[in-house]
Length: 177
Length: 223
Image 1 (cartoon, each protein chain N blue to C red):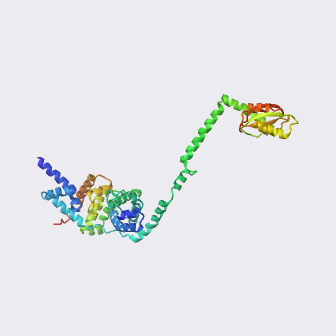
Image 2: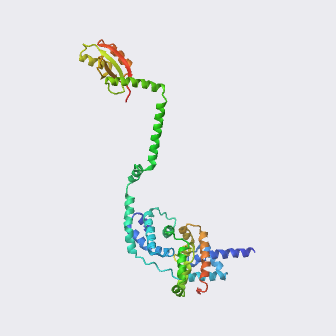
Image 3: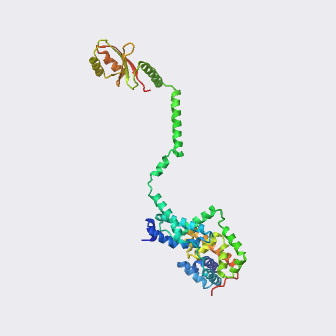
C-alpha cells in the first residue's frame, strides 16, 4: 500500500515516515524563500498537517512530491504576504546587503557562495523554478503544477534566470569540460 | 530560408529545454530533438556545460531544524484534527440554529413583522364575516356577565319549569345533546352548550314539556 494511501487511512506510523522523508526536502526548498528558521519550520509543519488532513483527497493525478511541494509553495507565499514581506524582492535585498559585506566578499571567492548569492538576487518565481529544476530534479510539468502556472511560463522563467545568472556570475563559472 | 527558420526554432526549443536535459528529466521526442540540435550548436553545448556547473554547486545545507522536536510539536495538532474529524455533525446544525445566528433570526423577525402587518390589516378592514363575529362576540360578552365558561359551542338559553326534577334535567340534557355551561341567571335561565347547531338544539329543547323557554344565542367565540 502506498505511503500516502496509508496516511489517508489515519495511519500515524505512515505519516511519521512521510514526515521524516519530506521535512528536510521542504526545509531545503523553503530556505530560499525565507531565512527565518522558525518560519520555515512553521510552514513545513503547516504543509504536512495539510497532507495529514487532505491525504484522502489526493487523487494521484500528479506525483505525491509535486502535490506536497505545491502545498508548501502556496503556504510559503501566503506566509510571506501575511508578514508583509515583498515576496519577490525581500530576500533578494537582504542577500544583496550581505553581498556588500567584506566577509561575504571573501566568501564569494568560492563558486558555491557566488552561485548562492546570485540565486538570491533572482526574483522569487525565477529562483523557485531554478531551485526545483536543479536541486529537486523536477520536470517542467511538475514545476508548473507546483507554481500553478503554464509550462511555457516555467520555461520562460528558467530562460530569464539563466540569463540573469550569466550576468551575475560572469567570469566566475568555470565550465565543466 | 525555411531551413534557417527550422534551425532557429530548434535552437529556441533547445534553449528552453536545456535545464531539463541537464537534470535528466527530458525524454521522448523532445530529448531526441534537443540532442540532435546539440550536435550542431556550439552555443547550446556551452550553455549546457554551464548548467552542469551550476548543478554541481551543492544546494544550501538544510536549515538547522530538529525533525524530532518539530514532529513532536505537530503531534498535538494531529490529535486535534482527528477529534475534529470524529466529531458528529450535530454541532454544525446546532450552531446554525443557535439563537445568536443572525441568518435565521433575520428571517424569523421578518416573518413576524409580516404576520403583524397582515393581522393589523384584517383588523382595520371589517368585512361581513368579521362584523358577524363581532356580534357573536358581543353576545359572548353577555354570557360572560352571566358567568358562562369560554368555549366554541352553540349556546342556547333555556328555562325549565320550577318543579322539574334533577333526573329529568339530566335526561333532557342527554336527549338534546347539550350540557349546562352556565347559570342559573337572576331570571332562572340556564346556558346550555352544544356542538350542534343552536337552532336544532333549541328546537329539541322546546319539544320537552319541562322546558318553558329555549332561545338559540349563537356560537360562543374563543377569547
